[in-house]
Length: 122
Image (cartoon, rainbow, N blue to C red; front, side, top):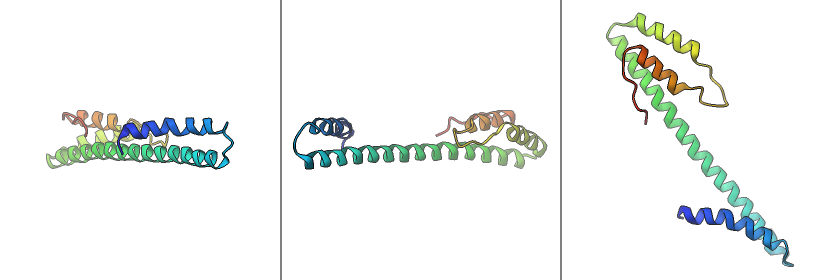
């Protein structure tokens, strides 16, 4: 189903439901109300799913950069430098359920602190 049709239904169903409230046909009001509420729930579910995919990809990309840079430096024998930068990262990282806690920015600071160029992400 094209995105224009979904947007049209998101607007048309609630408006139709509102208009049907002034009609004598009870079954039409109930049907349009159920469809309007169902469409809202479906759209919210789809948007939430896409946001979850985005968060997973974003977090995965930053974590891959963290691991790759750490391995490069450890293999080069710079364990003291890695430990020092990891401690800085640990002190700045405050996990939260409200947002992403600037995780990508903190990983970029870590990578720069080890003398590498941060990647552009995904």
